[in-house]
Image (cartoon, rainbow, N blue to C red):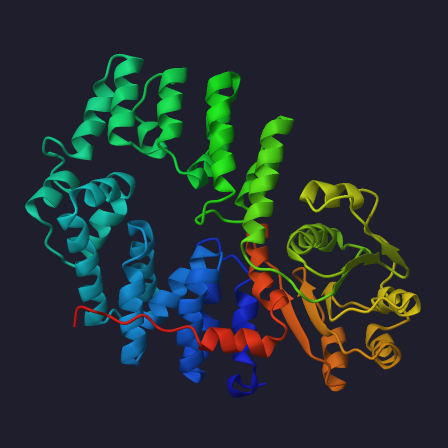
Length: 477
């Protein structure tokens, strides 16, 4: 199949489920083809994803391709979007453009120059950027031959920060002899945890409180293990402050939905911390949208499908937390096992799946056959499977009967856990069944990227929403 015959919109949406782990070249090819063959859609998707997407790597690749596009409106949109990134991501975008796209237009250099000059004109913003992202800031100035201001040069290149600068305060922090003085400097100048931790010689409760107060909810989640190793959980007042930050994270716009769950899995926490991390995950998922269509979730538990079971329980928690309609969950090999949870938390679904083990042959159709017999009607079906169906009843055959008897034609979404066949997809497309496929090969925190597809009545509506997303326009021309 040549590139023109492929549905690149679907492939691009599929790729958004993966997390390249900073190997941006792994998703570069599909982005290149998409902007080449359907530049109008690509531009709107790039902007839409900045608001609705979870994976930073994709956000960077989108902006890089906008900045190198042949379309003026794309380059202008990329110019505006670049201004919203932290310095380390701007540096990554520039490097990606040089190393993989092999071009860096003059407009991009202008965009980076404006980015740096905007920060130079705002002393507080510049100081915090320089302290958090010193290497990236230096890289941007040097690699693009942008002359820094006298103050920026003193802070970044000659290491002679002026009085009143945050870099000067950091030097004072490293020399402070008492915990009280360290805490005062951290609080007064709001020094970030990841920076201060390298300068503070002894983490007393007073210093820990000062550090945690200066952290955003996402920073607390990201550094929970570090805080635990440094004894933060051993002090009741410090622990209480951490819990309050986790409570704030439930309402914060800038928290990744599954990052809290990853933090929960990374260490042994007491029940209070675990409950709060679960609530962060659940509340952030709720913010991603609501599912109005009745849904069936079929999870492959045949041999070697341990990964499918893990993905399935997380999808069950995600969907049950945001659905406004009925949800039916079945695990299957050659028979279907109904799975019900007593609540909507991930812990509830983990308990519901505790006896579901991967073994046996594969009959994807057996779960739908059970629903047909029970007259359980749904508008969409999600299959978590490698599509290696080898036993009757076969899904595509049962699907025909299900539709005829229950007067419904559900959309089908196939979530593939890595290696897969395309047996079920091909059979369904031959019957002209509406089917989407997603290959899950990334981190679990990218799963909420499925929500926009599941929350819209149809793929067409999702595509319309993307196409109606306006491109930002430069106001400095």
